[in-house]
Amino acid sequence: MTKLPDLTDAVARAQAGEHEAFEQIVRDYTAFVYRTALSVTKDPAEADEVVQSTFVRVYRKLHTFSGRSAFSTWLYRITVNQARNRLRDRARHQGMELDKARLSVEDHTAEQLDHDRRRRMLYQALDELPEIQGQVARLRLAEELPFAQIGEALGITQNAAKVNFHHAVRKLKERLAQ
Image 1 (cartoon, one colour):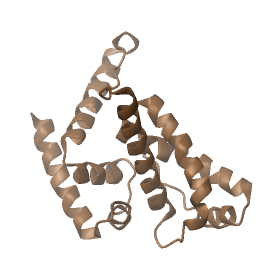
Image 2: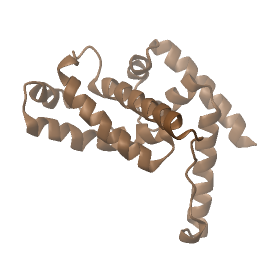
Image 3: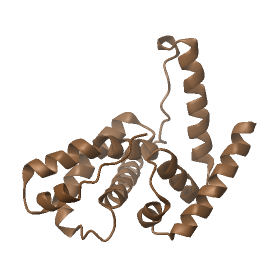
């Protein structure tokens, strides 16, 4: 889990039209956007597409970022919206259920298989949480965001983020203990 960089200066420079500053934002936040998109889409190829559409959207809408929240919070909201739109459009156009990614057993050692099994169990348990609890847990555990920023990103209070995280952890422990 990596800490997200503070790119306040780069964001201001990008808003002023400096292309190198925007490129720095893309470089420093691509992994964050990809992880967020993957947590919504559950499909690496779809997540790649969401990364592209997210940064196109950010480029077009950067002038609207006011700095009232953290840039990563604003970017998270755009990413989740882009991912949800992509899933909705895909389901509408293809008329099929979303596929879960499958691991190729032949390519893994026993240790990797055990690690992958535990990771799948965790992601499955996260998927079974109520939506807001799952989002809070992912932002707190995977992105290590503070509760205030999680609250901003999800449009809830800091205390609501804490409460949802507490309930999510309790449910995850119960689920994983089985």
